[in-house]
Length: 233
Image (cartoon, rainbow, N blue to C red; front, top):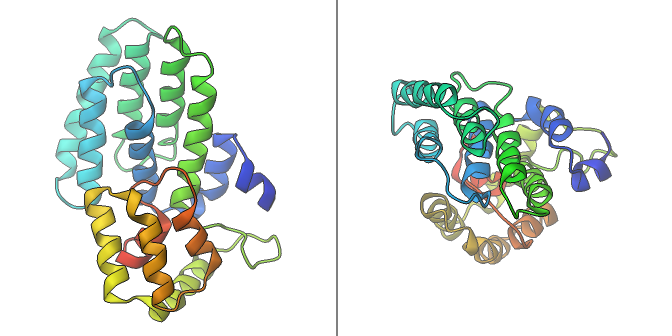
């Protein structure tokens, strides 16, 4: 994959499997949770809502895996009780894939099943295509640009971590850290431009970081800038 394909690509399968070696299980799970939260479904099924809640809680250590497995079981039962290939069936499949433990390499299929829901809802028009683009943007939100400064070569996870550690020491002011933690806890991603200003005030001149904070569009828990500042992997 080239840098241009990474930045503009709309094939989630290709983007996900290209970036999966750079993703922790936590980030992979939060990517899927973000897809559930931001995809404009008519009405997310209660099992799907519960799945996104418990997985998000589990990655932060606020609930144990038994709760995730319980929701996974409920999603499996729902899959067997609803009409095959109906919107409710695809919602149940999304919940089932989201709650796989340990985090499956197929967690990206949560997004795929959400797209299938939109395809099967009347009057959605181009929404499945819009959702596909959204999911690709969300993946890029949780993955640090894998090509920057490498002459088109992908950064290994080890080299990325060394780069991030160096950046952290340069500008982790109390204001920036407090803003980043508040953004994470409150899901207040509208504050990202304010975070960019705080980082600049602390001496950050990294264009990747500043532009990511200021770019229009969606951010989710797992955003690589917020995780960088708060010490989450």
